[in-house]
Image 1 (cartoon, rainbow over the protein chains, first blue to last red):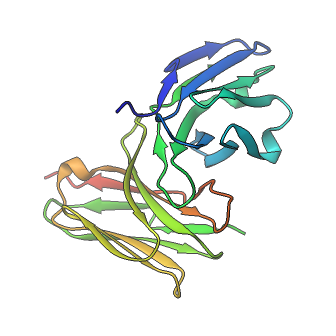
Image 2 (image 1 turned 135 degrees about the vertical axis):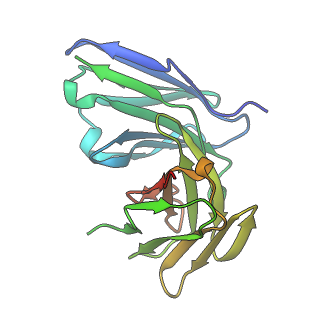
Length: 113
Length: 111
């Protein structure tokens, strides 16, 4: 079984650009999460979907961050416009449902110049 | 305040030593999940532990809900254990998003 896949693995953007990160959850998983990891803030939740419905949209990230899940096997995270402070590793995770562990993808390392 | 407090922040381990990593939480939980992360790597799930004790090789996880703590024990450490260990709290109810501790960085003590 394939785990969580994320593309691209690395992304470099100029300030003000729009970037789209992609995630494919483990097949059959109902819950999908986007997290951001930085050295200073650690791991923070960006968005959480259950059966494609948005359950939680990290308050601090609403303005320029938009996650979508158009079908059960694919999700995108759009950052528009990017700012240098968005430089971080963006992690996608999926879980069968509540009461089950979360599995993480390899992450996308974003650098905004 | 911070819901999940992890300690110590870093730990230097000699090969063969045992170590105990702690997470204390201030809210109720559905489960505690422990992860391992190498520098530049992703999160590898070690344990999903709602309560009690679980074992996996040289690792043991214990969650005691009444005392609001969860621990990860590493026995007979090896240099390959170096990296960062993170605990994450799954809240009760339908909100499954994890709240992470700040991590414990395990550093090998080289001879």
